Image 1 (cartoon, each protein chain N blue to C red):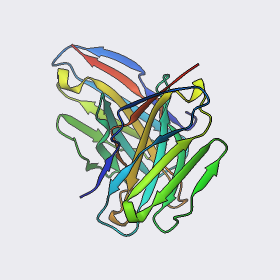
Image 2 (cartoon, rainbow over the protein chains, first blue to last red; image 1 turned 30 degrees about the vertical axis):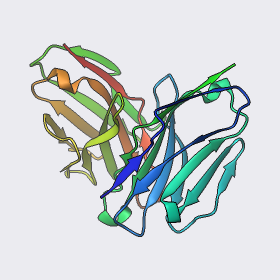
Image 3 (cartoon, one colour; image 1 turned 45 degrees about the vertical axis):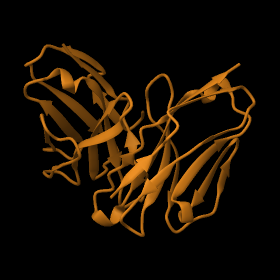
Image 4 (cartoon, rainbow over the protein chains, first blue to last red; image 1 turned 180 degrees about the vertical axis):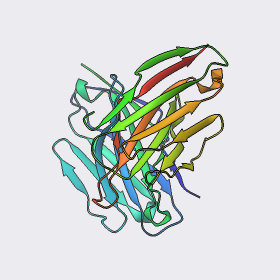
Length: 116
Length: 113
C-alpha cells in the first residue's frame, strides 16, 4: 500500500531553535519520488524538494536539510535556526512513476509555529 | 503561481447548486490534476488527466466530474453541491517528459451551505 505518515500534527518552537519534521512512507515500488511542500498562511503550495529513490544522499539548502533513509522508509526535514517566516504547514508526499500517473500521495501535514 | 490559474478563488454555494472550477495553464504540460484539501486530511486526488481528451478517477472522485477538451484547461464540475464538498481545491500541472515536479495553482476555496 502507498501511504505517507506525518505523525507530528503540530510543532511549536522559539526562533533560532532547530526543528525536525518527520515523514515515514510506504510504497509498493522500488522506483519512487519523495517531496516536501510548504504551505504558508497565505495558502499556496510551495515546492521545496524532490528526491528519487536511488539517491540517498542528504541534501542541504541554506537552513533546510533533508535526511533520506530507505532502511527506515523515512524522509525527514530539518530547519536549522528557525525563523518566524518558517511558520507554515509542511507536507511530505510520495509518487510512483511506474504506474504512469505521477499522482502525489500526501501526508496529513505538520503545522510549524515559530515564535519570536 | 505563474503558469497555473484557478478560477474562481472563492465561492459560496447552496446545497444542490452546480458549478465549474477552471484550471488554466500556459506551460503546455500534458498532465493535470485536481486535489482537495480538508483539515487534518492533507491533499487528496479527485481526478486527473494525462492528456487532452483523457480523464481518470483519483482517490475521491464521487460527486465530481471533469473534462479536458483543450490541453490547457482542466475543468472540475460539481453537479449537485453537498456540504461535504466544502474544501480548498488545488489544481496541479506536471511535465512528465521534462521530469519536473508538480506545480500547483493558488487554490479555490469553496463553501457549500
